[in-house]
Each structure stands twice: as C-alpha cells, then as structure tokens.
Image 1 (cartoon, one colour):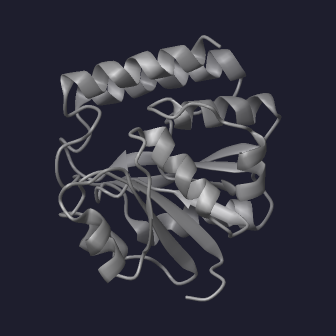
Image 2: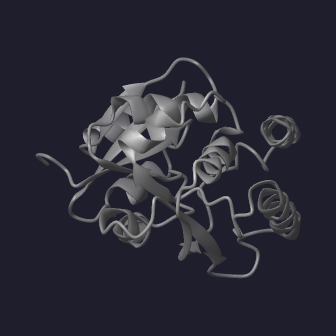
Image 3: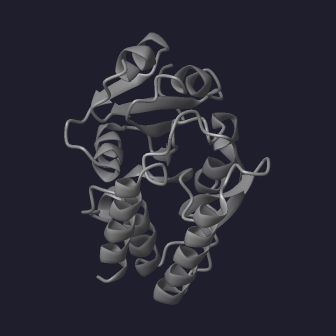
Length: 219
C-alpha cells in the first residue's frame, strides 16, 4: 500500500497464533506496523510474510514497543491496537474517523465483551477503578483505558511520553487531558484473545502493570 491513510501500531510479543487472523482483517487505507518486542515464536517472520511492516524493538516493555512504532510511523494519523485477536481491526475506522474529521484529538475504544467470560470480573473491576482514578485526576470522563485508540502522530510525539512499560497508555491519556485535548470514547467489540494475556495472565505481569500505572498516576 502506498501512502496509507492511517498506520496502526501493534506491539507484539509471541503472537504467532493470532497474527494471521489480525493482519488479514485490516480495512483498506490502514497499514499495520508490527513491533516485535523480542518474540521467540517467529512472530516477526509471520508478520512480514503477511505484508506488515515489522520493527524490531529489543528493549522489553509495552511502552517501548508502542513508542518504537510511533517513532517509525509516517502517517498523519496513527492507531494503536493489541495483536492478540481480542480486538477486530475491521473496527479501526470507528476510532480513527473522529480524528480524521477533526472532531476529536484522542479516541479510545470502549471494550464491549461479545460473550460471557471474555472479560473476567477481576479485570473489569480493576479497569473500572482505574477509570475512576483517571476521572478524578484529569476530569475526563472515560470508562476504559482503551487499547484500541487513535490520534495524530505529531501531537502524540509532542506529549513527550516517557513510560516504556505498562503505564504508556495511561500516561498518554493523562498528558493529553492535561494539554486540553478533546478525548472521546467509541464502542468496540472485545473478543476472546488467542493465547495468554501478558498482563492479567501472570502474577508478575499483573503486579508490574499495577506498579507502572500507580507510578504514572502519582506524578
């Protein structure tokens, strides 16, 4: 694809099972940038074989992968999306359109589980508490931190985000709110992921996420 309308940053760590489903569902005008964050299952090679741009980021961390993709992107508008098949790329226009038409500066996808058990109760409760703390800290009324999101690339770079672990998405929202950005939520489907979550799927991952986000909220 030449001169894509929107580039989509997909942080990736061992997502070989999900990548074929994800990358074959991209809508026209959206180009995937897969950021391989040290995969050992051939994720990078699979992504390349399916036509994605692949960036290698050796520094481990969700934020490190996201920021490497943002730094490599060239499109005016960028999206972020998990690549574990929990989010459907066909719904990327829902988050990108308000940025493209100028009615919003940052759009977050509010996850709507498509079936019982997709989003376990502990995860939903933790997300609800995080949203409450974000509202109290920023005044912006959000219900979800929104792993599918969209904004203008130059504006994101101007925020000078520093977190390189699990607090990256939270820091983005807080700094955007502090800068007076227009933040909007739109509904997106939340699907059963392929493979185990890197955050809620392990005790270490969950603890690290809590620590990173607490650090960002305390700034």
